Image (tube, rainbow, N blue to C red; front, side, top):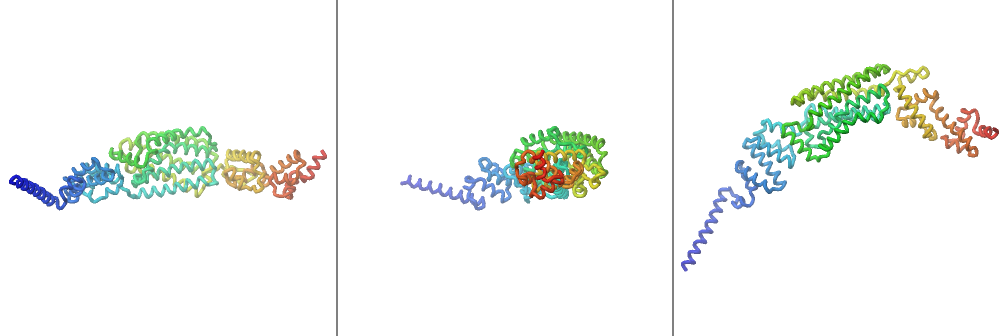
Length: 504
């Protein structure tokens, strides 16, 4: 009996100790059961964080990272960053911020009031100023210029007043300028992190500026016909594009963000190429070499151009050479480890000047884009100010002859001057001038000459056919018009011509 009593006493003491421990723990923890410590350390860490006991919270947060899922890791890295900031440990706070950004990139997190204590820290300030979206006066200006540039490029591309090859080349030239300026705008506003596929979006065209300007001036000044050999000028661009594709462009948006964050952690500008110095040197060499080529063209091949065209070309060349010089100086700054200040903006300002100047010319004097020679023809004085060069005129003549002799365009009963101009990819005015000068006849006379010549051949070889069928085949709508045109060209009606053939 005494032994049973002892067991009861021991059980009572054990139960009383457990209850007492629970109450004591509850009192200490402010109402949270002590069993929480063993069940969920993250909740316990959040309790310490909310009561500003950051030193106790940090070890528990770090412990919860071991087996935590993505959502838990996001939560923990944010709390760790804020805890370290509250303890005035900016280096540790930044490390946790980068860890958080690698999982879930939301740069507005840096605006949290919890970072106020370290907001003046150099590295934190650099990170915040690089990834948090912002609008500056420069970015607004560059955005405006890029939009104007894209409009100008499209306007030039569809303009029928400009020689086809000239307008394609100059359109691409302005387009890559505008793309580069937009790229700078996106970088300046930090929106490259919001739209990571804009990362280095214009770098592929770094070696195109010189070749395009050279080909354009050669086309305008010498009426050079673009050929396959000219594609060799773009081999560096192809090589660079392939390199950029495999090192940047083929990556996902998340991978590009990680790439930029990695560069930022290394103290580099995230918006620049990883081979920036080499790229700047090669681009400067390309610009300088092609500037020399353009200079040779202007020095030897523009004497036949009218004054306004010479002025236009000279101004374009001056802007381009100024850009080359400033870009070389900018390259020296890059090599010296500097990438900000006026020398950063100077090349872009000159690119903007090129875009605006070309846009001005496109609206005020579009004829300068084709290289208007002062071509005077006493028989046709109304064409003295035409935009046709000798070479272009001969080229269009060959195309026109092909259209009528091989494609037999005259067989269309609705043929008109606009149709011919569209086929030749030139203006109605140029098409009319072409026929007047090379064939010494009007458009309708030119068309009728081809129609009647074919009708004569058909009457010779197929004299059993109905005359009206032949008239329709060569492009006439009715027999009256056919008879009238036939008699004007041969002094005989089609019937009289057939009788003459039979009698002969």
